[in-house]
Image (tube, rainbow, N blue to C red):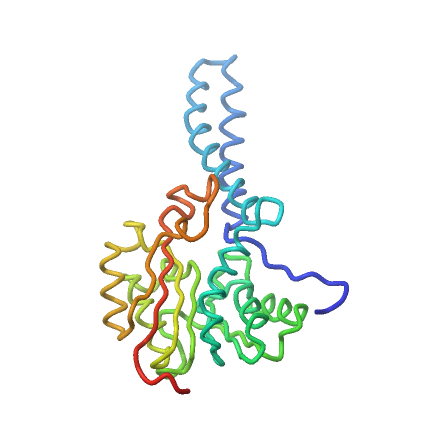
Length: 264
């Protein structure tokens, strides 16, 4: 690890989104204070309650994801690493690597592996390829990690390129796919026969996926089997507000393999 510097990972909550909701709720509260001019200004208490509640949920979620609030972002990544590590994969892919946190944790847990992270790093996120590379260098795993800008809808690697594929809260964010399950199929395309996958996403959210059965069918269509399929809260107790439907209440952890020859 680079002495004197700390990696910068951030959280899964867009800070810009939190600031916007906070600004709107603050403005509504300020306008309601003008009730001394006209009682109609009290109507602004209604949007204040709505936006204030959203701001509260987002702010508490950010705290829960940080070390001061329980470090649940790290704990979720550690849970995923623990499900990959026993397979001792040599080549691992993280689809939607964000700030590189999961890639780096995998590289540390698998000293004989090389771990690749891909992401589109959209402008509405505060992550970047440079940030990932800096974090890997600080953590001392730069030589065994690589990061590249790619769309999860069309991964630029040949079929069966990796021994393990992971993805954390990414598939529902793929904007250029009408059916988010197609992202699951694409990720499994680059998993070799005998390889292992671990995916976490909002698979139970009807706003993202038609049904969990649709996700199961997509995995079968990709030629993979399922060994674990359950809500995240069943594997890791989640405090308020992480169980909220708009946070991780719909998150499901799926793990399995792609049947075939286990040799590299």
